[in-house]
Image (tube, rainbow, N blue to C red):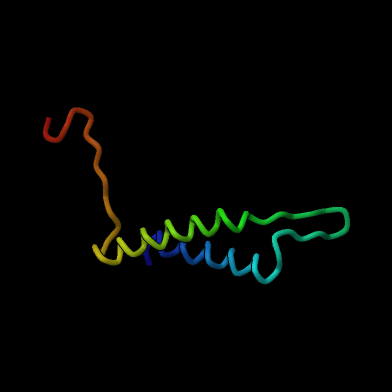
Length: 72
């Protein structure tokens, strides 16, 4: 499984948890706020697109940076 696919599944699990349990949880005098749903939706779109690109190419995209141009 690619990194993008794994992250996509984690984001989708977080979205499901927010939809099932709510945005924040209060226990006594403590409150836990989960990630913003809108932010998770944006991440979901990004990871879905990245996972789709990786599935088409068959492997993660590798980027090489050359300090003075290629072959210099």
